[in-house]
Length: 141
Image (cartoon, rainbow, N blue to C red):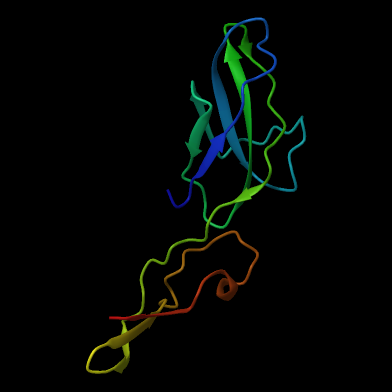
């Protein structure tokens, strides 16, 4: 999915004296990293019996970190260290401006179009809008 992240992790070295029954995975917005006592709520979480999952939907152009912990009959283990920071892709345009004929010949036509000025959804990226997406496309048909 466009605004999701594939998360994968290895087998836990500490099974808390009981067989691992599953995993709890959570994603937080990255704010310079998490501390072990951080109690901010996760923006996404899931319980799984597999060692991979697709986390989402997540906001476009947003930085995140993830953690995972084992669950067993003894309860939930401690959270792992946070993952490396990852960033989701920019938002897709809601609509394009009408196409314009750039050139035409006997064997080809070239069309171009641009984003409608109001088409981009707001994001949390600090980069200027113009630097995050192309403003013009063209194609030969």
